[in-house]
Length: 208
Image 1: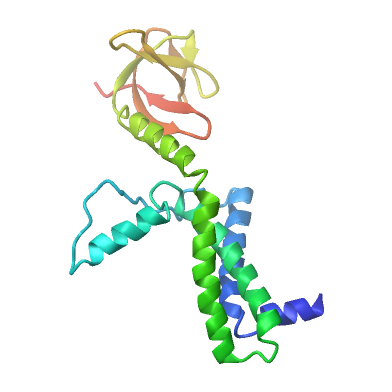
Image 2 (image 1 turned 30 degrees about the vertical axis):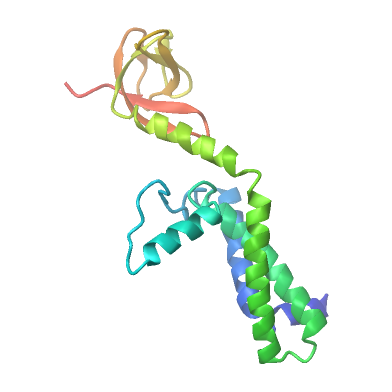
């Protein structure tokens, strides 16, 4: 175990170890509730036209599509990459660079990075459509923010309730919560925000 720790902090392994450590720290903070899952996520719109600066915008757009960024959250991609990159670097230097040569370490660094990127793409490829569908659902819900709905259950509280929106066909029924108030059946409310983890809407009385 001592030899292992001595290896992971060698200069040729240190960048990968630091990246791996930051990813582990992030997930520990998520589990403890210190930060949210979306803290480090970037809003990448692959449907938008890339900014073409000497061809660079198109290249970047293509790279993001290739690695499914914009579909799969950046935190998921970065976590898988960091684990593979760290493992590849440690194993590569252990078996090919026993003298801890900076030159050989640099070659291991490049090979591990490219290999880890490709392996990350292969690993997340099967689940990318699931994230894409989730993203489409989130976009549909974002369009409802600010709309008015009617309390359809006996009341809406901070623990229970449903509201409905009249539309063509059957009404759209949504789980709803209201902080600091009890809204009776038939009350008109405004949709404020959607909590995708709890599948509930925060509602409030609209401004008169």
